[in-house]
Length: 107
Image 1: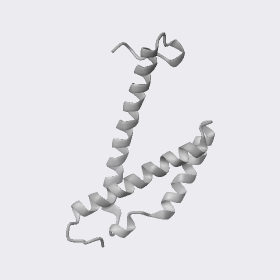
Image 2: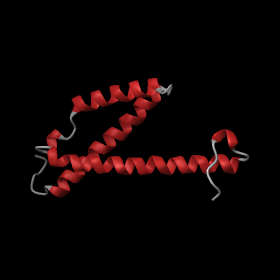
Image 3: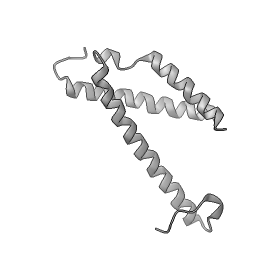
Image 4: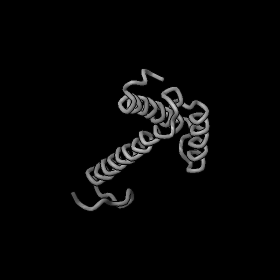
């Protein structure tokens, strides 16, 4: 693959696609790293019921809306995107909790 070009320096659709593919890979790497933190958080949770933390989700979504607005990004899209990311990560954290605490039975 040739070196990544800035969007305004692209000379073909292949250049554009290379940039999109590169950043999609970066997004997936960032999500993988984020999940590592999510899984590590179980060491600070008293039980499985503490995982969803709805008040934290509300605060996180508010922050992400503000970040999106400050960046000139579509706030509604960013909110929906982060809702999906957060709720999927909560489910992954619950599964991780259950792997680490097989005798807890949802406690």
